[in-house]
Length: 154
Image (spheres, rainbow, N blue to C red):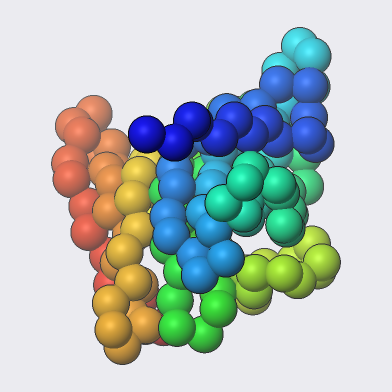
């Protein structure tokens, strides 16, 4: 049995990984990083090689309130898709975005609220063989939590 590989995000005082997915060069991860008091959060997305060395990393811009990535997927175009949530106007909102693995651009290729309004979280993401993107999670409507699945054209 091989010993475990231990990795840690290096970009923030405190970090958590919630989602991981395969990549030809290792493992893609997402979660959050925050300052010492966890006042400012940012979504962390990174690629780690088989030995635990970080090969690529791109956090989003820090913001007030909780923001995190909960799941990652890689499509055939080399884009990492991240499902997560961002606090906006005091409410947690589902958020899905894509960026090319290896890019140093802080701006995503695309981003999308999940759904367009109402408190929600995007908790998982799947990409099919046609690069169609399927985020899943929930929305809170009229005080009731309802499961949600969307289809985003790749």
